[in-house]
Image (cartoon, rainbow, N blue to C red):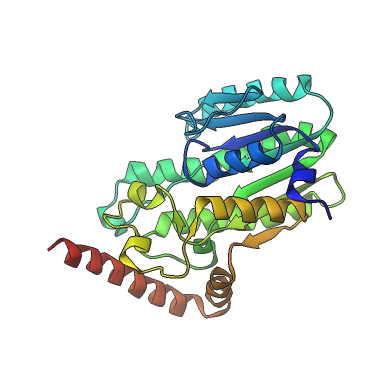
Length: 276
C-alpha cells in the first residue's frame, strides 16, 4: 500500500477545483508539501490563499458557468496532453450551501448551487475522463455527511451532496477494471468559510452545536490523501462522523428528517437568541 507521498509522486497533473480557501486550499497545501514538483492546476474564481509553486497554474473559472468550465477544461486537456506520463488526479471540491427555509431563500442561489455542486462535477469529470483512462488516475469528489439523510434548512445543499455521493460510488463501479477509480469524501462540519457563505451568523463550531464533530480543513485534507493512496471508494472523516452517517442512513428517512430539522431549527433559534 503506497503512502500519500508515494502515490502523489506517480502523478503528472493534479487538478483541484475551489482551491482558493477551505478544504480545497488545504488539499493544495498538502499536495505541495508531499509532491512539490507536480503540475498543479486550480480552478476557482479567485486565486488560492497560498502560492501554487513554479509548476502551479491558476485558471480563473466560474464553475457554475458551463461556457467558462468548457474553456478551462479545454486548457486542462492541452496541459495533460503535453505533460510527462503519469497519473491524472481530479479533486472536485467546489461547492457551497445556503441555510434557511426554502420559501425564504433566493431561487437563483439555489439553482446556481445545483450548477456548481452537481453539474460542474459531472461536466468537468466527463470532459477529462478520456485522458484519465489513457494515463490512469482518480476522481476525488468532496461530498458531505449531509449526503446520508435529508437536511431541512439546508435542503438543496444536502440533496446536491447526496447526488455527489451516489454518483461517485456508481462512477467507481463503471470504472472497475480500468486504471481510474473514484473516491467520495464525506466531511462533517469543517472549520472554513462554508458556514459564513451559507448564511450562518455564528458557525456551529463557535456556538458549541457541533462539539467533537468539527475538524479543520487541514485534517480533512489529510484524511482525503490517505484514503486516495489506499484506493478507497468512500471515506467519512472521523469516527464520530461515521456514527452520524451510519445512523442517518439506517433509520427511517422521515424520522431522520424530523430529527435533523429539530437540530438545525434549534441551532437557528440559538443564533437569534445570541443576538438578542
